[in-house]
Length: 262
Image (cartoon, rainbow, N blue to C red; front, side, top):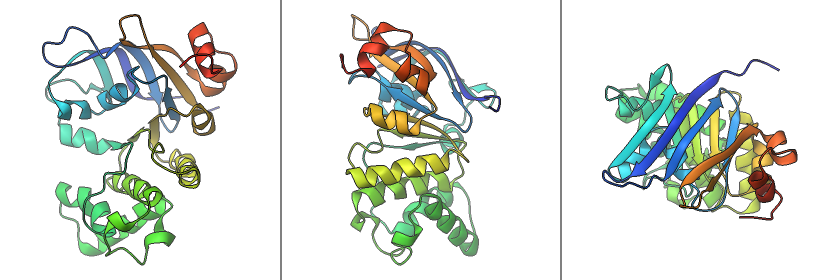
């Protein structure tokens, strides 16, 4: 097995929603997210999974004031340092949300959007990048004749894959996915899971999922989150997915993955 290289190092991360809040949403999280691997974040509702993944590119700050202790290291820097350029950070660490969040514009313009606001790209080059991204999202054959039509006319599964195409068009290093299949039917879910397997060759992926079978199918590593008595999000255990599901070290992990809890 090739040596694992951390793409993100999370160290003693504690995160609060609100400038004056005294109760953190997640507390003292430490883990590595490895390059070109898929890391699943699992756990019961309210345990801080989505909060955690949003801290990895600071998109949580769009929801209001926050407090952060600890660090998230990416490309040799703590992303919570004041000098960090957030626009550049979020281009390098892209995000796909629970529900497709396409813009009310054409299929083509949705994918080209991030490139256009970043810099001027000649039309021929833009066409090539858009096609490459849509092909990368395993969607080209389904939409190549609909590039000028509204993206909102696509099916839910197609919309989600188009969101992935939009995210990868700007060539991020890391792709974060917050329950990307929760609103999809089983066939669309299967297509997204197949896509995740393909994308891991080029991208580092972290995915929040409520579906433990999905975590087993798509991920190399798994982190199990739960809450303590104060309902504060904690990471109980992190390891290879096979180990987490077949021989967990913590009884709480064992109870959760066996269906006895959560």
